[in-house]
Amino acid sequence: MQVSPGGDPHAGLKRKEMDGMNSSQGKRRRDGDGGMEDNSMFGDGQEDGDLDMQNNEMDYVMGAPKHWTDDEKTKFFAWLMGPGQDDHWNSLRASKNACFRECAEQLFGGKKTMQALKGAYERGFNVFKQIYAFEMFSRRMGPMTINMNSQADRLKEYEKRLSAARKSGTEVGNINARIVDHWHTIGWYSLFHGRWHGDPISTRPTNRQNTTGPSSAVTMGDDDADVEEQLNGHEFSNGMAQQNPDPSPMDRTFSSDGASSIPVPHPMSFASNPNPQYLVPQMVPPTNAPVSNRSSTSELVQLTALTQHIMTTYVHLLQTQAEDAKLKLEYLKRKEARDEEESRQRRETEQRKQEREAAEWEHSRHAEKVKQRTALATDLLSNPTVDASVKQAAADYLKRLFMTDQ
Image (cartoon, helix red, strand yellow):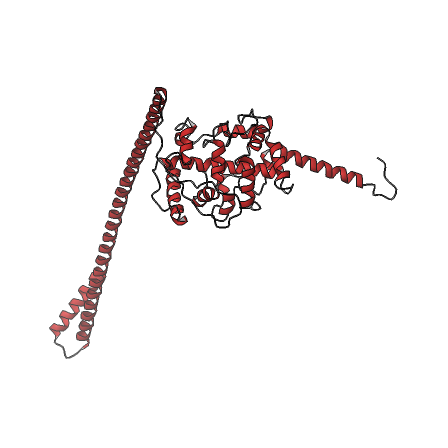
């Protein structure tokens, strides 16, 4: 290695070491999910149980680290999935990393890295899947009979339905009422739902508009295999994916073309709005589309399977309640027997105490009487004026007393 005159001979080595560290760091960011920001609440290196929903609620709502604002997330999601962005969506489906690099340059001017955008999208997609599972469960509970313009009423109703969903085993993760309300109000859920046709398991997105260009059913590239595996491997509990094999019912669920039990806001502009308003969509009855015999048979099979599942769960619940009642009865019996034994022991102890006190009192009284009689007999014997027969009786008493003590 040649060193320029006057230069530091170790400068070249230092540069090589730094280049090696940078390349290894970049390789680690490319090879695994660690490439997402480690401080993200949705990084794969963290468990769901590590989420502090009380202290970091708004971080979770964002679906991204703290430095992501609502406006930035809205711009990012709209650039990927908004109306008229079919080219970007197809690019994402074909080559995810290239799409995120392009977005980082065009939308953020290089201020955010490809890994940051990748992490934000995948975290947002995970939140969307959980909200979608909640929406599918909530449909079975019937429509919301509350004032949807009141945030307090919406949050209360969402919280009640989320609690019911978790009790039923629906995979809603750690989302809460504020997260669901925020996603609906700001319009992120509509963006994801519109592209995924309401079913996060689907691997073929649909175009939002009929535009010229390649079909949206693009063959997945190698660099998008991890997202595809995540989509294909995800299964919703309680038969969420099986209840709607055709995307049309799901479209009707979240659009104004059909009835919905979960009101969804109208599409909103993506400009900054510090106080977004929750808009109730205009609801119309669903159209009665003809159903084929095969579809009816499939629905009957699904309904039968769902009924069997409900009956099995109900029987299991009854068995559990019976076992709990049996254990409770046994516990009450043991407690009653223990209380009776303790009460008997207390009565016996009190009785022995009373008997001992009575015996001590009787002994003290008898001793006092003997003492008094002994003193009287002694006085009689020492008194010369007492008759001899009385002295003899006193002497006999003292003699008997002394013989008894021996």
